[in-house]
Structures are given as structure tokens and as C-alpha cells.
Length: 136
Ligand SMILES: [Zn+2]
Image (cartoon, rainbow, N blue to C red):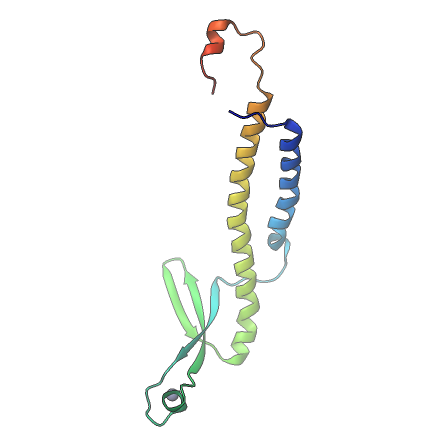
């Protein structure tokens, strides 16, 4: 096992605190959220005379993917509805990302705390027999 200077580990830990503030920013927002995604789909309608068949200019439809507990649903959106839903779905993506980043953050801090604990470990006072056994 390679020894790590404690000062280095403490600097890393302090940086993690700063990182946490950044990770949690979306959770401090006031913006309403909506569990879904606004997507643009492009398709051909199949009519021989249409620009989508003649010139390859595909039709665009803006759809809302709604995330329900038991599955997904999609709805077509008008321009006004896009204006209404898009900010809420974007705020939703941000808070979901924060949640997943928080999970990674926690895992990395637990590992860091473990490294700090190993670094601060002292076997002072243990007899020779006890020293031979590996500690948790
Ligand atoms: Zn068409």
C-alpha cells in the first residue's frame, strides 16, 4: 500500500465540499419542473407529391415524452405548449442530473474518508501478535 500525505487528502476533501455546493445548485432553483423531455422528431408522411418525398425536407413534430410511474407517454405539442413545457422539462433534467451527480459525489467522498482513516491509523500499543493480523 502506498502512503499518501494527509495534507493532500485534506485538500481533496476540501475540494469535494466546494464541488458539493456546485452539484446541489439545481436543487436551490425555484423553477417548476415537469418529469419529461421535449424532443423533435423528423419524419416522411409518404405522400408522393409532398416536399418530404420530393426534396427530402422532413416534417418536424415536437413531442413531449411524459414519464409516468408505470411507463412513458408521448404527446404532440403546439408552439405555445413547447414554450410552456420546455423550461419545466429542462429544469427537471437539471435536478435529475444533480441527484445522480450527488450519488457519485457521495461514493467518492466515502472512498476519500476511508483513505484518510487508513492514513491516520496508529498501531501504537499493540503487541507483536496483534500487529501481524490485518485490520479492518
Ligand atoms: Zn410529407
